[in-house]
Image (cartoon, rainbow over all chains, first blue to last red; front, top):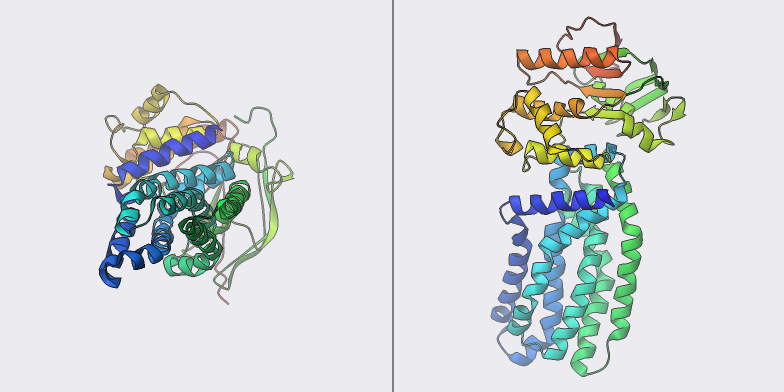
Length: 221
Length: 214
């Protein structure tokens, strides 16, 4: 557990030393969402229909943007190789890094989400469902993404590859999440979809740290 | 430190392939306590690759490494507790101060260092007044000394140092060599590479890697 908290504190400190770089993905998401009403016309009914999908796709893409930086700096300056060599538990370390990453780059997005919902004319019920899916779904994206990021850490042009690797894996999440919001807009319960996303999240919390740890080791080869 | 515990690093039949080229094959070595091994050879011959394999960072194409007669794949955490590896990269985050970096590194090794003990080590390495400076704002030589401060902070039976003299000034080189001598005399093991000559009056064994141009 000391490994977990020492990594947590270090990454937290680093996130704030890097000149608010962590706000980039949130700004990206905000920009994408604000462009849509301008692009497809301000009709409230249209926006309401496409709104949840837009917010989710924007969240997916901004998560990809943010994930790229998860291990990059540590790989370049050699911190990662020192971490591999310390006796501490590598999966714990991976979990701590992903948690900090989620807190600094995705949590602001959740805080911003009421504004996004307002832009796209979502009803209160739809917004509530959207928030639930985001709370459960974004940590899942970070956890799964971390595996691919650790694998591509040693590559120079990892960015494009990362998108190709990850977006297909994110599709089931996207489908369940938008279907939950759609159910909410029709006034039917959406607990089923939430339960599935929740189950995927629990599964990911239990297993992905081990996969990330292994991927980090492979990246050192 | 090692004390009366047997510490011995042994490698058998090591092979390494990088970019489809065989760097070395069927390489065997054995390092006993109180011994220093210098890996020599021209650029690109596989010195760093060999050191990374011995540290357990990358996997050899073939062969195995034994720490006290147990394969390091099976005793990961004991071997890592006994090892300090300093590579080409600093291994530190440049956006943290020297103290923050060293404290984090110690915590990862399961130790809780006092700030005082870290400051004492930094003083010894002539980094007085640099305690609160971010590593990115230091000169190359100072950054190097922060990385080497690990050797002063905590005892470990085996040091693997890749080009440790790089960027150090005369005074720093001398200080490091003194430290290496006392480590070896206390029964420690050092495996190192350098294009500069180590001026140490302890027995040094040289392992010359030959270029294998095929």
